[in-house]
Figure 1 (cartoon, helix red, strand yellow):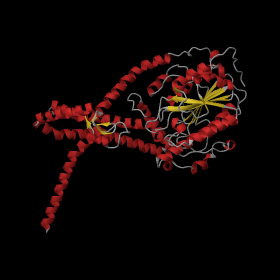
Figure 2 (cartoon, helix red, strand yellow):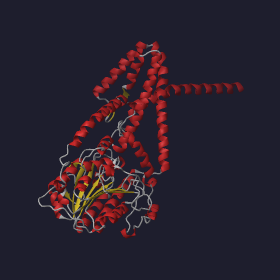
Figure 3 (cartoon, helix red, strand yellow):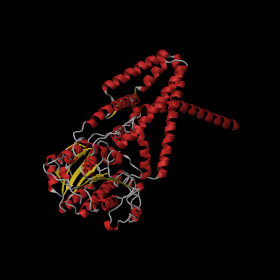
Length: 565
């Protein structure tokens, strides 16, 4: 009996050892295979990519056949390290494609890592951001360790076979190469839109090398574009004469994209707010004209859209943004300031100094989270609700007498991801220091509750944009100012969880004016009446806006300069 038990134990031990040996043999192969064929496009069908035939193993075997001795293992180590780096870039591509619908920029996007950390801290919690950061570092370390180890382990197991049967491996290499070439030439697919022949890792390296070279060439191209400016030397007396005496507000509503207007695939919850706004503004004597702008960004990096609108040049990367900030390009705020307006920017999400507000945009006054007296709670990413932002701005700028006309850029951020918790409108006279929002914050749906399913996320997004629109309309109604001109627009579409993977970069833009002379100035633009542009409305690139404004509201004979009021 005891001998039987001993035999059983030995048999089980032998099976375990055999299983362990098999796992040790298979895991490196599986790890390397997954790394080689994993897609850099998150829209690919799940797991069907495992059936693809990558070109990379063919190239690796060719390398191992050519290189021998100790150099073979060194080559394997280098190949593994490179593969680990490529995998890291592939993961970054997936993240950027999911959030911003573009691949990672090896030249400039490293600066976004801090922004991502801050965004997580604002949207979730500082501890959550720290945990995510630590987790990311651990993943990177494991990735850069596991992939080279797996490659080395795989080569060590293949090495004896390569040395004993070099001709057999050479013939197998030829067969694999022919199969891959035939699959590539005939475009055989393992799933709709997913080719059998894959160049995933090699293609990724080639794509990024091409982008880096293009980025380096783009600096001179962009410098030339910035230097070409018909308004750079325009006399102050010739700038914006058609708006003299008006308060002009450029109001960006965060993530206010085409999906908010069309309701596809998001709920049409914003449409009633837009129709309500059109009706309320019309009853107050204001006309509304709307169209579309193509934003240079998608899902985030709002400052690229803001700088594009202001400067009249296309800012679709951090590289271009940094280059623009170091230039003397004329902006809308600079033009208004030169023509006699008091210029103001209100960025409630900022909690530290923004030097470019004065050095590049030349604003006379900068408002942020620190200097508008808000003492209420945060709402997700937003440091304060939009209603408070607008009330604080109006109290500090629009009710002051005497004063020069004001030009302002105001950023409304309640509709910034994660769209939870959300505020609601309160009586404007009860806003005080914002403490009134405390109970509202406590009763609002939490991020965890909202993000349980995509439908509730889309509904929360629609509610957040509607709140921003309603707040802005109430500000206009309360101002009772026939000389108020408002440009309301989005900065970019919301992330793909709301807008979908194939959404455009379009954002709505609306001009609101009480003075009919202002609306007549833009008659040639062809913008549609109301706040809901249709598919037939004009579509401009966002960088065309500055020149169109400066041209439409340019000099007319005998236009006087408005006196302080």
